[in-house]
Amino acid sequence: MKRNILIFIFLILAATSFKYRSKTQAGILNPDSRVLIEQIADSSHDPDLGIKTEKDEIRSLENQEREAFIKKDTAKLSSLWSAALVVTNPDNSVETLSDIKIDFSKNRKPMVSFDRIIEKITINDNVAVVMGHETTTVSLDSDYQEKGVTRRFTNIWMKNGSDWKLAARQATNISEK
Image 1: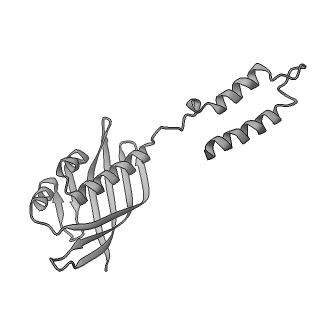
Image 2: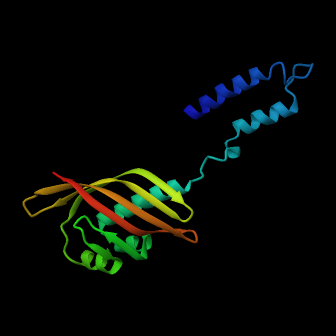
Image 3: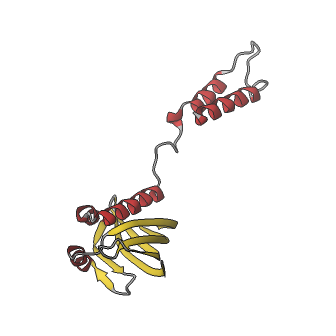
């Protein structure tokens, strides 16, 4: 609705600015001016509409990875993670994909929440670097006690063909609640 109002206002301003330059002696908009106004009003000519940038794609993948992690959706995570994934965990251990799969198969503490705030995405050729912070809350025991942890993270995504895969991750705890 707001977009339509803005387009309408723009069209009025554009038509007014063409008043002296674009009208024929009979007072009718010349064909070039009419084409310009039609293109502005027609959203199908807008190259930015509906087109995702690589940064948008990485943001989406980050969110998919976060959601799959909290749900322990190993099938989805396998589709997002590189076979050569290497991670420096907040507990200061370095793990490969096989190590992470073993961790997932163990009875881990249930995750109550997992929020990720992306502060910066930088893309160079086929490498995307994502930096930010995240907060996780895990259930400690059957008495409904929870522990929240905030950490800084860096995720490295690599593009192979048309697919981005998480290739490396580093996370460091910065506070405990």
